[in-house]
Image 1 (tube, one colour):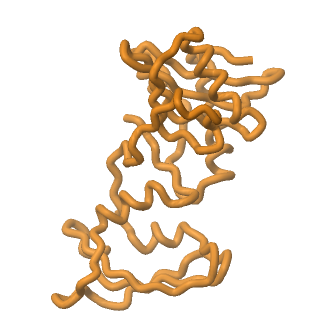
Image 2 (cartoon, rainbow, N blue to C red; image 1 turned 90 degrees about the vertical axis):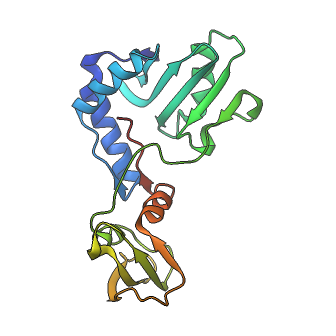
Length: 213
């Protein structure tokens, strides 16, 4: 069953999403009841809402949506595998079967229907502002897919603690080990800014930073 969320559903949504993200992501922001109370009001102010997919009272997924005159926007569908292919059906129901341009934000590839002509994917770019305040702690949230050792040079104009040459290494499946090897020098050529690092991290596997505020 697919239905519109009400304010009383926000606790149920927060519990579902916390478990959903915890099982899939190493780095994420916490989703609370208050967050979804705010999001429900925000989506409703844009002629949209939050759709819930349920089976016998059990929540299987949720989808934000908003509607403009020219298009409809689908935001952050979080669907369990058994219902992820229903996204197209949900959109069809929302449009009343009319032909509409659909903009998709934070939609996983496997959720899209085979007929891509009905989808217009939004550019892949961060939709929030974020900052790494402790580079070592941030990188040590991740596990290595395979054994590796790498050195990077990072520049941070605000937090000097993040600046320097860093060695990152781990065996397959291990948490990354991060060691500061020294300070930046004038001759260092391949330097990444902390801003570019946080922007890139939004699209790393198992990172979910998609807050709408």
